[in-house]
Length: 267
Length: 207
Image (cartoon, rainbow over all chains, first blue to last red):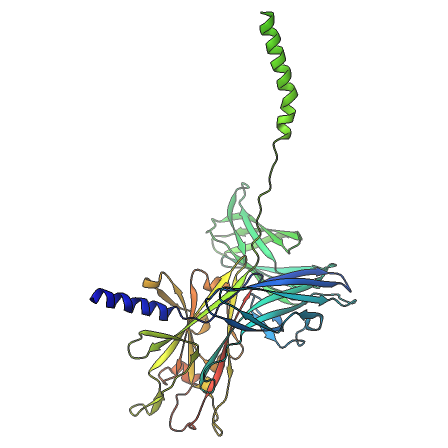
């Protein structure tokens, strides 16, 4: 009898513990489009209700901008107020969504690209839990939302970069990365270090940045291994998506006393 | 003997004839799969007993009632606080979380709202359910007044990798000098009676 009571209590606790907000899963967290002036682009997004409850959602557009230190942090802004807003081009098939338990829904979007698109335009489509709370006059109301980022960029992209001011601070190598192009750049970089004998001594990844046009950010890496005194070459390979790649070779020396000195930089 | 030589010749001929055909049968199949940059968020908010720190029922709003007057401290406090667990789901790329507070209503004549009188403490939870480890997210406070989240506190996918974000939300009891220095204040009899509220918005997007 006591075993049954314990079992019942356990099951009751589990069932109470599993009460959660209705959950929504968005298949595409990012839509990246290369568009031509005057083009009409259509597409679909797929959402899943991963819970056993009904879900009601609000669907709306906002602008977003990456903000310093450009590590992926964003500011979400009312539609039409961002520097590179696409709010007036985008039409969404619905403003509300109702899901049954474990249901899947498809949302259509249509984008009318203007004739004079010269730079990337960006925004986020939010899906927000629209459940009413029993008493919202007291305490803290919780709102959850999941967003799909839209990158709407011209086919004629300019990905000009200025990478300068290389400097070692201990084992960290940093430079100033400036985006001189017309689209957001998310450089994906790797590096390796070769010694005087041409042997690879160290390798790793370069921290990602998310850089809007006309902005600069610190771009850096940290050596993983302790280097013996001597001269080395560090090779940075940076991909700017769409197979745009650039390489920097940095000759440097490690001294007993003064740490790291940069000798030469080559493209 | 002639038959043997003839058989070998025929076999060699057939081998030569069919060898190119067999080679043509070898086809390389490209095996590929594309996982989209998916994004999802799940929230579980749980009421926690202030005295025992035992987790209780899950909730859909953070209601601090009933507030009880503590005559020793001269402040109003609830007997509970809340833990909000924020789980994110990602495909390729990582999902970032933003926690933002928006001040709501307060009684007429009241100067400072709920955002001045409540705090959020950010920790990362790792490990299995029965042996969880909490790590303070120092770069986010880890404790902040809710009013200081008006600009949105952002957590990158890398920060939350291998675990999930837990946010403890409670009424400030006036026991933390750092929060007092940030102009935090407990509820006292100097505050105007009535309803106080606000909105905590939790946003998940890929980076």
